[in-house]
Length: 591
Image (cartoon, helix red, strand yellow):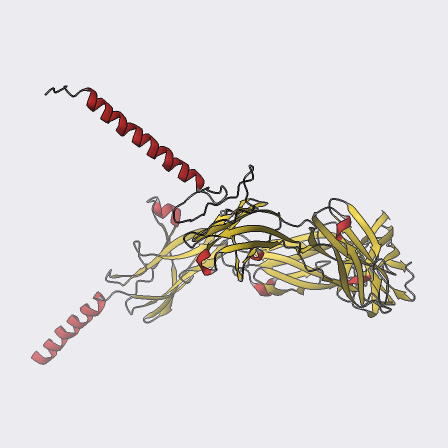
């Protein structure tokens, strides 16, 4: 009896604990983060509870905007069906308000018979779905409205949907809305289809439709009106290209189209393509262009003319021809670029591919053409030359040009810049003086625009050497070196200085000097090249250790001697004067 009592109490306690467990809610519709379209939609939730209160299931819905503004949730009681512990609760809710896409929040609740409530989501952590009311946006890339189409026409459209996205399997086109053809997705948002228009009549107007749906079945449509043109445009080539073609040739053709009109007339040959310019009406044109066959390697070619109408129909005619443009080439081997020239020179030119050369012309120019003569060439025109006398022209810069004359007037030439210089340097030996001894300078003033500064040399007895040149102006130089006269014996010598300019013009200057290093040595009394204007021989000597004067102005040692003598005389006069003053001031002593 006691056992039965305790068992009854335990069962009551067990069932009371079970009734305290909240119902388990699961498998809701719509799914979290999903999209739904407008209109009536079924919301559902499954509830697991043996003591489920079937009238307690509720779905709460509010837009994200209203939620953020603190508005109240919309509550919708749900109808439940099931048995035992498994129930399915649903509610049909209509979203009839038109507008843009919105984000909606929701959660579910359900209670058991004891009032214990379970949730799927809640007011602080709700689920969400997007109410997608907008169909995909569709735009035509091809054909455009009011255009002509013909043959197998490619239809190209762009489709976009910013909410649930485009359902690619629903993109279709139709010329009559009775039969729809699927379009393929080529790239993101772009769809193409092929429309065969050949069964339609020329000039017939057709409305072309396209449609596409998003992932929640919102469907968008678009259309364009087009006209049919399946006529092949007509093309007549007027160019006669028989025989070998060289240089620039004229291309000419007449074209016409009855419906959509001519869109373009083009040609291509080898790797060259171009467009013919046309005059007339869009339905009947005369077209022309110029083809430079020199841009083609020599050989046989097929020249293709193609006319395209505005519906995409085309017609091509081909013409064979031979191109021969062996291009001669020429180079000037002599004189070299930027050469300095004097006297008579030989201008030499070398040629290649010279089968069509008739002559080679030499052109000499400065600010204007000064000489125009044919060069002397060998029989095969592989080499040519011309003797040019530069002395017939003033010194200065020139351009020598060799131009090839050929049967096809191809512009082939070579040129080089040169300088004519037929004037030798002007020199003046500034130092040494006529009589020198010890170390002295050799200083030479040179006037020459194109001086070769490394060419200035001196000879003195058996000694030779270079002078270092310093420019004073663009055409004035001072060239100098130091020399030790003790390297050779005393006596008379001829100093020889030579200089050569860049054109090879050479100049020489001589000066007689007398080297005096031994005691008692002196001039023999004969007049030297350094004699004074009065005819006296210059017996002074020069030593750079005692003189630091400019190398341009020679220092004369006789001036030093005169100065010393004058100073000595003044000094003696001063001493004598002091002695006299002293005697005049001394008292007279008598014995």
